[in-house]
Image (cartoon, one colour):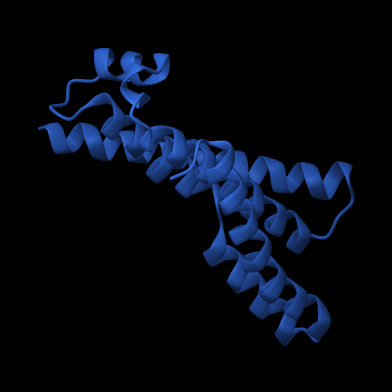
Length: 145
Protein backbone atom coordinates (compact mmCIF):
# COMPACT_ATOMS: atom_id res chain seq x y z
CA UNK A 1 0.00 0.00 0.00
CA UNK A 2 3.00 2.31 0.54
CA UNK A 3 3.75 2.28 -3.20
CA UNK A 4 0.26 3.68 -3.84
CA UNK A 5 0.99 6.68 -1.60
CA UNK A 6 4.30 7.20 -3.40
CA UNK A 7 2.56 7.10 -6.79
CA UNK A 8 0.00 9.61 -5.53
CA UNK A 9 2.81 11.90 -4.34
CA UNK A 10 4.32 11.93 -7.82
CA UNK A 11 0.89 12.39 -9.43
CA UNK A 12 -0.04 15.34 -7.22
CA UNK A 13 3.36 16.96 -7.73
CA UNK A 14 3.25 16.28 -11.49
CA UNK A 15 -0.22 17.73 -11.91
CA UNK A 16 0.80 20.82 -9.98
CA UNK A 17 4.02 21.22 -11.98
CA UNK A 18 2.26 20.77 -15.32
CA UNK A 19 -0.38 23.32 -14.31
CA UNK A 20 2.31 25.81 -13.29
CA UNK A 21 4.08 25.22 -16.62
CA UNK A 22 0.94 26.01 -18.62
CA UNK A 23 0.16 29.09 -16.50
CA UNK A 24 3.71 30.45 -16.90
CA UNK A 25 3.71 29.82 -20.66
CA UNK A 26 0.31 31.52 -21.06
CA UNK A 27 1.39 34.44 -18.84
CA UNK A 28 4.58 34.92 -20.86
CA UNK A 29 2.67 34.87 -24.16
CA UNK A 30 -0.10 37.14 -22.88
CA UNK A 31 1.71 39.66 -20.71
CA UNK A 32 5.22 39.66 -22.13
CA UNK A 33 4.04 39.00 -25.69
CA UNK A 34 6.76 36.46 -26.36
CA UNK A 35 6.30 33.57 -28.81
CA UNK A 36 5.30 30.21 -27.33
CA UNK A 37 8.70 28.67 -27.99
CA UNK A 38 10.48 31.30 -25.90
CA UNK A 39 8.04 30.66 -23.05
CA UNK A 40 8.83 26.96 -23.23
CA UNK A 41 12.58 27.67 -23.24
CA UNK A 42 12.15 29.84 -20.14
CA UNK A 43 10.14 27.12 -18.37
CA UNK A 44 12.83 24.52 -19.12
CA UNK A 45 15.64 26.78 -17.96
CA UNK A 46 13.82 27.82 -14.77
CA UNK A 47 12.88 24.18 -14.14
CA UNK A 48 16.50 23.08 -14.48
CA UNK A 49 17.63 25.83 -12.12
CA UNK A 50 15.02 24.85 -9.52
CA UNK A 51 15.66 21.13 -9.80
CA UNK A 52 19.39 21.79 -9.39
CA UNK A 53 18.80 23.81 -6.22
CA UNK A 54 16.33 21.29 -4.79
CA UNK A 55 18.48 18.27 -5.64
CA UNK A 56 21.53 19.83 -4.02
CA UNK A 57 19.64 20.78 -0.88
CA UNK A 58 17.96 17.37 -0.57
CA UNK A 59 21.31 15.61 -1.06
CA UNK A 60 22.89 17.50 1.84
CA UNK A 61 23.49 15.85 5.18
CA UNK A 62 21.09 18.29 6.86
CA UNK A 63 18.15 17.61 4.50
CA UNK A 64 16.25 15.50 7.04
CA UNK A 65 16.16 18.49 9.39
CA UNK A 66 14.48 20.83 6.89
CA UNK A 67 10.98 21.88 8.02
CA UNK A 68 9.32 20.73 4.79
CA UNK A 69 11.03 17.33 4.95
CA UNK A 70 10.08 16.87 8.63
CA UNK A 71 6.47 17.86 7.88
CA UNK A 72 6.22 15.46 4.95
CA UNK A 73 7.76 12.69 7.08
CA UNK A 74 5.15 13.36 9.77
CA UNK A 75 2.02 13.46 7.60
CA UNK A 76 2.70 10.75 5.03
CA UNK A 77 2.10 7.09 5.85
CA UNK A 78 5.13 5.66 4.07
CA UNK A 79 8.05 3.60 5.30
CA UNK A 80 10.61 5.73 3.48
CA UNK A 81 12.42 8.67 4.96
CA UNK A 82 10.99 12.17 4.60
CA UNK A 83 13.81 13.07 2.20
CA UNK A 84 12.75 10.27 -0.15
CA UNK A 85 9.10 11.38 -0.05
CA UNK A 86 10.14 15.00 -0.57
CA UNK A 87 12.19 13.98 -3.61
CA UNK A 88 9.16 12.16 -5.01
CA UNK A 89 6.93 15.20 -4.56
CA UNK A 90 9.36 17.96 -5.56
CA UNK A 91 11.85 16.45 -8.00
CA UNK A 92 9.95 13.65 -9.73
CA UNK A 93 6.48 15.18 -9.45
CA UNK A 94 6.46 18.97 -9.30
CA UNK A 95 9.61 19.80 -11.25
CA UNK A 96 9.29 16.78 -13.52
CA UNK A 97 5.82 17.98 -14.47
CA UNK A 98 7.00 21.57 -14.75
CA UNK A 99 9.84 21.00 -17.21
CA UNK A 100 8.81 20.34 -20.75
CA UNK A 101 11.60 18.95 -22.88
CA UNK A 102 9.30 16.62 -24.74
CA UNK A 103 6.96 19.48 -25.53
CA UNK A 104 9.94 21.67 -26.42
CA UNK A 105 11.24 19.16 -28.91
CA UNK A 106 7.81 18.75 -30.50
CA UNK A 107 7.44 22.51 -30.78
CA UNK A 108 10.95 22.78 -32.24
CA UNK A 109 9.95 20.22 -34.86
CA UNK A 110 6.77 22.18 -35.65
CA UNK A 111 8.84 25.37 -36.04
CA UNK A 112 11.21 23.56 -38.41
CA UNK A 113 8.41 22.01 -40.46
CA UNK A 114 6.60 25.34 -40.73
CA UNK A 115 9.66 27.03 -42.22
CA UNK A 116 10.97 28.81 -39.09
CA UNK A 117 14.39 27.22 -39.42
CA UNK A 118 16.39 29.81 -37.44
CA UNK A 119 13.87 29.82 -34.56
CA UNK A 120 13.89 26.01 -34.45
CA UNK A 121 17.70 25.93 -34.33
CA UNK A 122 17.76 28.54 -31.55
CA UNK A 123 15.24 26.46 -29.60
CA UNK A 124 17.04 23.18 -30.24
CA UNK A 125 20.53 24.42 -29.39
CA UNK A 126 19.74 27.20 -26.91
CA UNK A 127 17.47 25.20 -24.61
CA UNK A 128 19.90 22.44 -23.56
CA UNK A 129 22.92 24.75 -23.31
CA UNK A 130 21.09 27.26 -21.10
CA UNK A 131 19.39 24.45 -19.15
CA UNK A 132 22.68 22.72 -18.32
CA UNK A 133 24.16 26.05 -17.25
CA UNK A 134 21.09 26.75 -15.08
CA UNK A 135 21.31 23.25 -13.56
CA UNK A 136 24.99 23.81 -12.67
CA UNK A 137 24.16 27.18 -11.09
CA UNK A 138 21.24 25.63 -9.19
CA UNK A 139 23.44 22.84 -7.86
CA UNK A 140 26.03 25.40 -6.74
CA UNK A 141 23.40 27.65 -5.14
CA UNK A 142 21.82 24.65 -3.45
CA UNK A 143 25.07 23.71 -1.79
CA UNK A 144 26.66 21.55 -4.45
CA UNK A 145 25.85 17.98 -5.29
